[in-house]
Length: 211
Image (tube, rainbow, N blue to C red):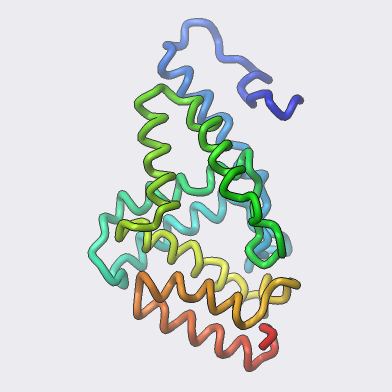
């Protein structure tokens, strides 16, 4: 299958599906590709790496359960929408592991191009609203986006802890780079930030993170 081909092209919808619904189903079919995009983070419950769809679900669950620790009041439903949408562009752009040197060099350009291509599959009004959610998360200036980004930092840190180091053992990981990720949690929640600090401190003590 050509990399430019859509999943729906393998089994086109039957004639008679209304145009708007056909566009929505085409997008939803293409979103199935998110399940194939592997992240660097290892799962805690199985001996394999996490995929982007699993990551997005975990973030949504974290928002539901941990919203009470947000430094600023947040709209939980809106924050869930942000975290569910934010990694969809990796369907075309791929993952950019934070602890792999050079992996994020052209990340912004790749992801913008991916956003234009992917959200463009939707009806114009929904394409605009989905792109607005993605842009909001990337900018990180609203309380909801800040908290969503904090969950995006906390989730892999929790997986690393459960795996006795996980991606903290990658070549680009060190106390400095791990602390930089920790700062994203601190910015949105004093309570959760304090917990991530404990995880990093103990990870250093156990030798899971290079000083």
